[in-house]
Length: 272
Ligand code: PMM
Image (cartoon, protein in one colour):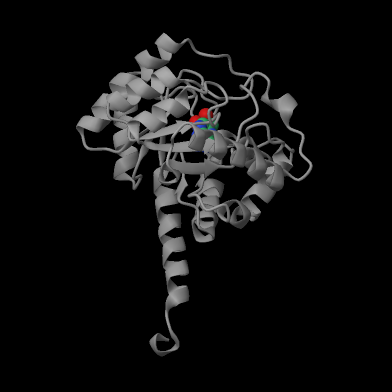
């Protein structure tokens, strides 16, 4: 899944693709590099970010979704708002990617039920301006699984079918740096809950810290793509359904490696 942030202030690509034309060109280049889906978002979730008014979010994402759809590109809409999700599906989006799992705007579950599209429910505890204060866990993997199970219960109650649901541990969202690694290393526990899993590690802060230079300064977002591709390979080999990334080429190669690697596990003795 290639990221198309139609925002002036995303942490990871700094608003590079803010105009519809630039977003379109960027998305098509991600597809050319191997992305299968484009995730179009109009509201930054950067830690500390303020909310964008609904009208502005619609104005940013809907024309871009129409253009990709007209070119046959599968589109996911990255939104927490029911009205934006509804308009995006009408414009052609086939996935609603909700970083709040429905907590920001519970009506969004009804939109998912009504439209029948795929829904990514991410683990979330609060909007970007407060999330760093909500990052306390007993055992982060168990707590995330328990909270995601609550989202699944709510989705089912709204009439959403299980085959529509994808879960996401929400790396970097109300997660201190060290909490992100168990969520990756113990992906099998989340997968055991029976839903496809999406992993969004691309260019996140915890990778900046991992790759800090000798001076202790975190690596800049654009310096985190090789580490992102490594996570893509490991996540795919562990059984993730999808990885959400800003740079597609490295991840497309990494996912192919993972696929060849795991595929070869099934090769019998006589083929050796
Ligand atoms: N991360 C961001 C935005 N949307 N959606 C899902 N499902 N999972 C994520 O981890 C996720 C997301 C933040 O990254 P960005 O600002 O670079 O898009």
